[in-house]
Image (cartoon, rainbow, N blue to C red; front, side, top):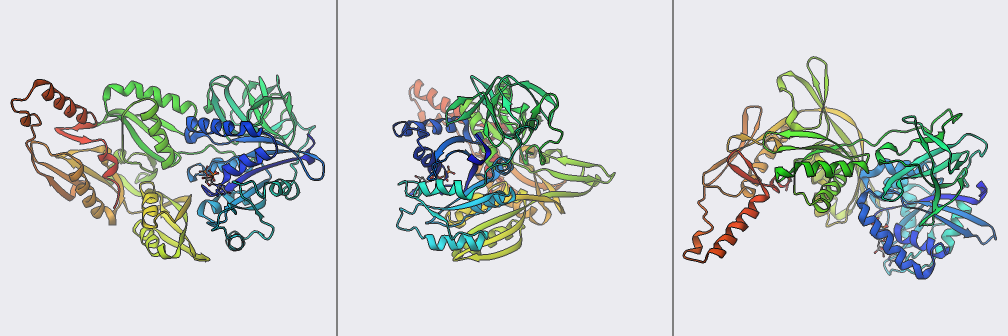
Length: 597
Ligand code: GTP
């Protein structure tokens, strides 16, 4: 296809504003998928999505469209992940296209992820077509939302298209607008191959599938290519496009988007943002801005049943093959035995991986407190990256500690603003900006990442009854008065419960944690002191009183089977616990104890 007849775009939207429904409509309207296959199609993609969990990153489709001017166009839609954890991947896929549809639910208005995603599009120099969706609903208010787009985002919304992705109204106008308002790609057919590695995933039949955008030159089946980040060579066995099912083609030229396979075994060998070129006489300059996604949140994963350690190792190995942003190394804990210290892009990423291990591999896990990476500067000048509070060096040798901070943007209806400000203030936030868009306030806070990795989002949702939206980006490291707080149960330190806290909050946190643990740990036949300490100094203490509990006592004279059943039940209950010295601590305690109410 010649460049003038190609349009490449993505759809940016806040979650639930109708991105997927609109994409499905565009596909259906252009006959890319026949009406009678549509339902099946939708279900299929949902299944794949479910199967691949949240790791699904880009859903791409090539659409043929005959415009009102009679000309035939190829439209390539790249879908981008909507969640903050995957911001880096969003920014990469944005660089593979020239324009965006900005979808805003006309019954709701601009939200935090609308902003975060549209800023990425603006940064990637996109032309943007605003689309007001859900106009079939009575609460739809296009004038208000168009005005809000102009006020808050600062782009012209006077020609915003009014759409119902549900009824199909406005879909034709949207397609025409893509042709007339978005630019054609540029590229040089005669130059050496220069292709961007946009995404990759594992397919059981074809091996790793690599999604590419061709910048210059031609990608052909049978050629040898080089991945420039690590200089590896690959023989291209297949080249194709998504319609949305795979269709093989002989070659892809400048401006086109498609995929290649090259007998690559691991997703780890392909890096999002990499440049692909010819093995010889390739392009001299790689595409700029390549950097691998870095994990920012770390936690320990340990099997509840220590005999399942090898199974856990297998599960983690398999998951890591397909997820280059998930890192892990073996860890031993005095209390928990053998496990893994794992790194994630964010909390959602952590939860997804943990759930998959529990569900797909049937291994019950103890998850230790999530931690960010601290920079610990030693008196001798060395800097240690601390991923695990348990590894905190002797404080007398530490000069100072720096922690990562974020810029958080929160949009919230006016009536909940007070609660949101209080929440941010409680989390050591520094307010940077407060503006209004209609009856909604937009607040920008500078916050320590460690104050939000835990339960910030849950708290935000609960204090605003779900009406707030939230997005963040990392800004850098700053020094603060941070200390390691240890927890002792029955005088034994439980390293999986140690956390880094701000000195001023340590006592409050310590007290809250001891109280929580007192409720979470079942009573034993002896009394159990629960303490929080900094260095050797105890800052909070609770005592769990003793209990004599004989579950079979009430089966006095009863039959043997009933008695055995009860004992089995007790054993099953025990399985979810781990023993620390003489004390059983339930699995939930490790996470629940750290939640702040
Ligand atoms: P995520 O996939 O969760 O990011 O959401 P999304 O932005 O892709 O939204 P999705 O397409 O899943 O739509 C969210 C909900 O809004 C679904 O229940 C849709 O059926 C509904 N929806 C989407 N477009 C319209 C519309 O034009 N009118 C009405 N009434 N509902 C719509």
